[in-house]
Length: 182
Image 1 (cartoon, rainbow, N blue to C red):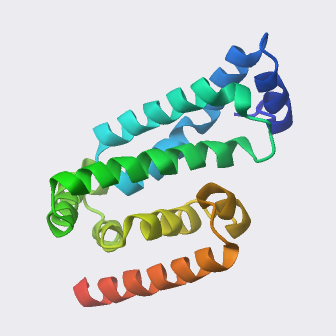
Image 2 (image 1 turned 120 degrees about the vertical axis):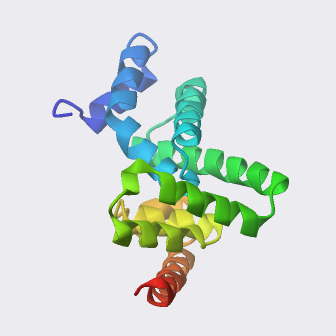
């Protein structure tokens, strides 16, 4: 979106007379990016859509408290990460973790998005073996190239801890790919 200006939108979000229009711009600007971030975590399209909708509902309900201290994307990612963590926590209570990972791997294999792309499928299966928070850190850094400083705001964790988590995740993903590639 060419006409999207973060500073202008932030100011409009703080003004009750322009808030709704500004929020619509935010939704248009960040929907696709947030959808794919959520989708990489939960895999399932319908779950990702539900979580995206929940993210924007929570953002709208709390938009009056957004002061612009962080970027809008950071604020939205924080909400989305919390939604995903809650969702994954509920999922793991109804199904053992190894069974859940296996079910998600099966969903990946059946997903038309990955059809014919064995390397992408293998990478996604490797990522699915990571613990939830580590998987989110990996996804934000690897796919979205989010700076560690911004990730620190999203997770409320130190930059050093995030770098360590990402480094460990990369090692696990590389080991999985080596074990499972022909």
